Image (tube, rainbow, N blue to C red; front, side, top):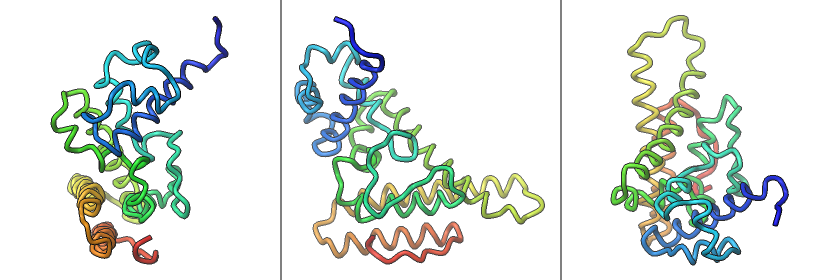
Length: 213
């Protein structure tokens, strides 16, 4: 039986999307291949035509809105334009937004799956590192764009920007992990606001958005 062009790619995307939702909600260990394929509207038999194991699929799932151009988690009121000179502030706002906090199934896997990654093999760790590094790179680029008026940059400037971008990324990821773990919603909202405020202060950006968004 012949399939139209792009059929295989589309099926793979459906499997990855199903796995992302389920892993984010239930964790890697608690989700079976049968459940992943059912969530994609497929049968288990086709899984191994695309992935050798659930662990291999896991590395595909570790992507986010700033690394995957086809990421579908476009939350209402939240915009991230990777081409914008304001992409750094956009990423921080999006990451610590109420929408990201509430949309567990479609959230960045760095928030939902860090514990699973630490228990996984080198491939999963590398995938996690790739996503985190991409986030740092975007933030660092925005920091550099904000310093274009300076005539001369030194290696110290570059190291400082890297350190600030890493700290901001850690604030975003860690802040959301802790906020999700809190029972008190008001405290969780306050924590997200605090992390965003500190991240913006580190970068020297003005944050004119309202709290808890």
